[in-house]
Image 1: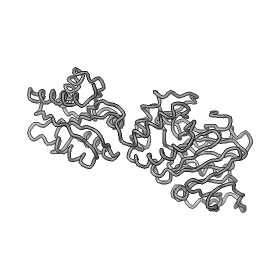
Image 2: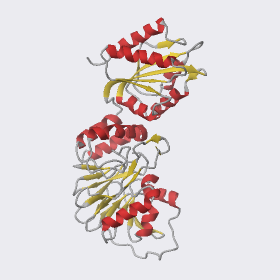
Image 3: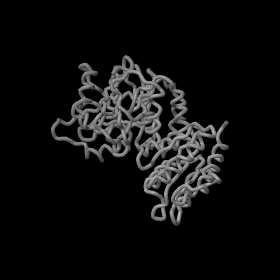
Length: 418
């Protein structure tokens, strides 16, 4: 797919996958983007999942149109992007693999000592038009160019600048800036769930929900590291963002960067309420729905209710990060909380959930303790404000519980903008 006259997406779409990284539902599939830059010298940016190596190499070959690639740039070693490195090296043995030291260490972890006996050893190392420490070595038959943070590589008409982005979302990650087309090749940053299906256009409102779910689920823990990347990106004139997942972003770049700033700062994106409940026999659900009804009667329209045992829990996590208020409702279970609630809170704490207002609702027929358990689970989260009113349901919502629900709704409503 042409992006510009010189930049092509030679990646693939995966419609066979059901769970990305073995856990995230992806009903619309996934894209594994790889980019080819045609210049005096040719660079390929990242590979694809090994299951699509043959399709990807055909895309590369067709785009090369008889030319040979000079470089394969490895920005990220996760197998959905680095899985086809060996296939590329075998197909193009004279190309040089460009990566940082941590990435090369991982290449050996994934592929072994990088030696083959089926090809003649490459004896000569070509000259490099590169600003770096000069480290360039051969590992068996692999031409290797090790780059450091800030190094540049000229392709002729354009210069690539490599910027390290550790833990966005693996330690070896780097991004690459093309000064001619003002393109940021961003590895997994700014990606989204879903296949591209050769669509040339993208729309911000379509991109946002799955980009948010992707960010919170996969990168959410590493807000400080994303902030560092954003500071580096602020010094660049970025006209397009080429992620390894999702569409090429060519419009609303400032909005995209602003959203990443909000997410990575752990600031709420929306004034609203997520009611996340778990229910064994429907009684805790009834209490949650009563709260929803009362909140909406008070004029609060931005209220979402999710069943943690049945709905996509990662969508619930994304919604918790999106809103400024979160209500947790669960039965007491084995003197603890219902398993789905424990899993949900664990996902929040693992992603540094903070800067929110929390309200607690518990149910118990003889010894309700869930509110205290949930509060204890959240104790490491920063800047949480707990609602003064809490709700305790004894088996079913009686008049006392209903009154507590009304009081909680009024308190939450008072915290929302008019």
